[in-house]
Length: 204
Ligand SMILES: [Zn+2]
Image (cartoon, rainbow, N blue to C red; front, side, top):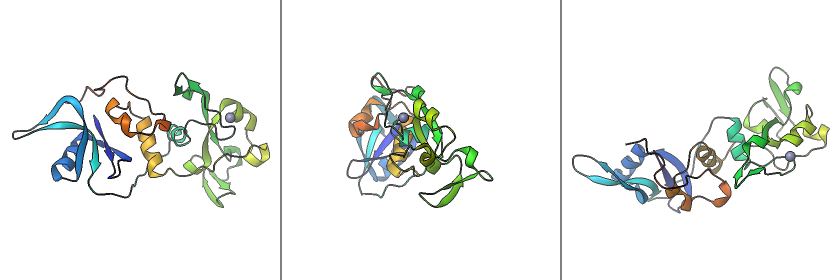
């Protein structure tokens, strides 16, 4: 069971374990703006609403880091092919089956496990945020073991290490998002949403 934390301006910034959210509520750093229905956190002396969404009283600069993963690359790229812009859809959701991970400078060009990125003028590991993009199957096949310039397939955006906002989107991509959170999340994030309230019934 998790809690969504908003900044003082109500922009979402991170996901917390609910225990941490309770600590922040008790210390007065955050205020609960949405609670899981009919659920309370009880102790000997109090019963608090179970916080689904909390907001900081004071504005904080967003920070965050996330480990490299292919799912993270898809989420960072908005489930969109970095070459042709295709967004495969399965119903209303992104169809992840139709997406592949593409190493922008392919492994075949690596020297000692590193590749050179001309646009950022540095050597990086083959598998890293800056050398990985989302590609549809057709583009990945067409590009094969070539760089974008060799293939004549320019990137629509330069891949980068995720921003704090990307980190949150990636975190949300790993969860089933409770319905209580959805009013606070941008529609374009395409997170997988719960159909009804009270999703994570396991906790408590
Ligand atoms: Zn494509």
